[in-house]
Length: 292
View (cartoon, rainbow, N blue to C red):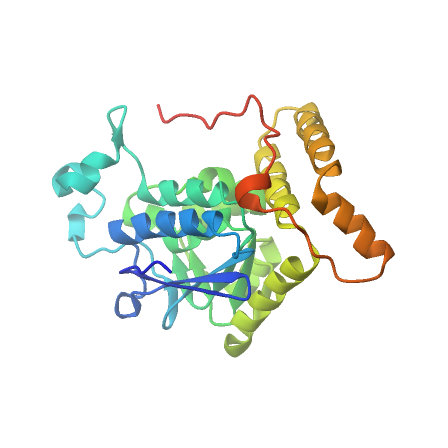
């Protein structure tokens, strides 16, 4: 089991729980957290015992955004310098750390559930946009506060947010930078459901269990790729080509046989295939765009 400086990581009954763990700093996002979140998703993808991932925060916040301890130089990469900043430079541009995290979550082979327990501001909310489900505590608050800090939306949120809530709402939240409650997030489609604080993690685990107990992990991994990647496809033919390759590959798999047989025999399924070795390549021409 990996250990981290800014995260807690635990796996129980097929669920990996990743807890942002800087409660004295309201789980503010820094370079170490960026690296560790990416490493944690590498771990969940590689571990066949992990069937779903839950992300939450320690203490009273989910994540209060970027760590502002560098003051006015917080977002000035040239002034901050150092090896960490240099390592993120590509094509003469410093890559946004929040974007590196959301792109890694986008590539996850396991379903990802956010259990937002409190304040989620800046990257604290934009990192959640690449997650599949966003459950909120009644205490949760959200804010796309970038314009109030003299910067712009990051973490690929200009792609993710309009897909989730539409352009008008995305622009209002980002133009004003105001903090809004979980209920507004629910009304606008950002949030799936709101729960009493003590019920939040149990609700996230119940959703994870419904997935784990009834579905084939390889099928879930393919489904996640299909839905997220096709959100940007130019034509439904792109989906038809990927669907067809996937159905052909999965139709002859042990999972398909078990899925039908268990249904006919009226018993719980026991899917044999593993994400680590049985995930078919249904994207012969897929290449993740390069940073340029």
